[in-house]
Picture (cartoon, rainbow, N blue to C red):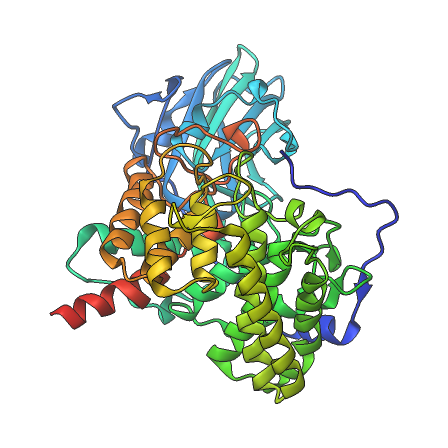
Length: 524
């Protein structure tokens, strides 16, 4: 099911002061040049030839009609492609008609885009059809791509000549400063590799704002921002980029003050007409966490009222049961899982955010607001336990459903006692059927809930299994959606539009440095 919204005549509320400040915080992009490490010809799905063509041989490889060349750049890149093309044989008497296919993974390279029939626009598929009228030619593509592999197919040419790819390069783009990051050398090869790929994922999503994915959707989403900001604080420490993103969300909102789920920044800043209840609450959480990292009093003054507006709107969604209901539940994302009942999660999200909002109010010395939020928290917590806690089964039940998501968010929200929280997460560990978690976004919070109840060994085991299995499947950066038991699963109706470098997947680096390594040092 698509969590999208189309509002006719949508006119966001603008705040020029915040947008001006966000513009001042626009980062400088860094560039490098990357060339292919080799190539191969793709004949069948998932089966490149074992013998790879080394770079020195590329100028001598010619392509006629129907032939292809697949270039492997050796790592996931975000940037702009340049091709130096030549020919062999007689002088070209017709244009070279080329198809360029960019792929983040080998599997994606092999997929037939014509078979895609999902609900996301096929325009996200990274394919180009080009006519090259003159050879030799230097082809500089104007569009930015996210890829490791490039498949060049000669759709048609003249019998008189063949095309030669003399040189290929990608001018990469990112605002991440790798000199600010230390390479992890813990002695554990798997954890070190997971940490490395996590930071690569984050870096490739760090553009002029924190993008959710450089292939798709290439824009700023609140849920992704929160997780990227956490990982950034443990690595690149680009706090100005976090601040810029918070100001972008504050600078363009729904007319009633709600924070949009995502914001477009080109050609101008404009809030999307999509609202997600849980994401709006995470905006308040992210503001408070940014202030914990920076103690930025300017940001506190500028963003405090906006952060509180999200809480006040959410409180108004409490129904006659004393818990969150109605449209707010439908407006929750939580995870890509159609079978998930989100009623308990929606209430837990508000509980969770209330804790951060109280900290904000105290930071602002707004004691009347702090006391109000405390009363709201305590009242909501009691209602949540009455409605969702099942004493017999010792876990949270949402309209008859027992899911990992309900346990996770109620535990993170401190809805119950530590003893009950431990039992709830032990229950979550046993769940294998029903509403399964499908994204690294939800798996991150699952690991954090395990850590919160003291199940550190189980948390590390899950991190190794989930993100490690992506590495085993060939990941250079971590993916948007991943189910090890169903590798081709997609929430969009086709994996060809899945993002294979996705911001919400970057958090293992945070978890490893914040929780796993300190625990090891303590035990040592």
